[in-house]
Length: 273
Image (cartoon, rainbow, N blue to C red):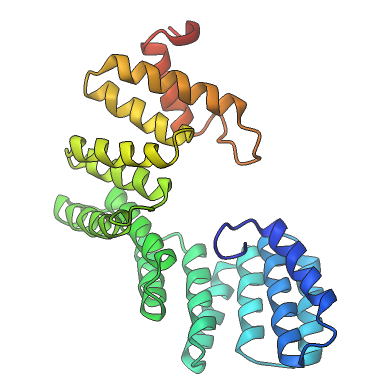
């Protein structure tokens, strides 16, 4: 739950239960559960409980890279980006624990505002593990740089790098809808609208009730002048968005929903003229 879905509330519950059940565990096993509970609490935003579990972990092991990682996450969640990055640099310079260094690098990347800094940390994370998390972050950082880069050459280079990474991620038949959406945005901006349409259609096949996918399909169909399909996607996206009770519903003021509303108005859907 913690690294895959980022459902930190659920992660907290599982880690706390694991700590309760590990009476027969070794100290090292218990330390792992307590440390991860501290990280989950920090990611969840309960810094007081995170610090309490960190103190409990330090009773089992006064120092170590694992505990430095908790400090890094705490710094990130406390809004102290400078301290987070400093602690990460120190940990990576002294630790040989690939797993801990990977998580630290990903955390440092998450607090950076400068796209170049994000790229640096995600590249480092990818060096520890070429999995999708680091690659996805790197692609997003390159895409962000493409939006802010000064000069067409730098912008084109950043866009190309982002597209290359997303192309690799989306080559997997089970690529996430979010990856295909982000890839389609880059393809559209590069004028490759038919390829963007293929990516969104593939995403829709696996997640037919994903209103984000339907929203981007509606945008693209509208741009291509296919108003019938744009209307159908708009209507479905609006219905699904309004019915979303998952707790992860996009705000009405978000850019995507504003685009959806605008296209709906242009198509005269639901009185939105």
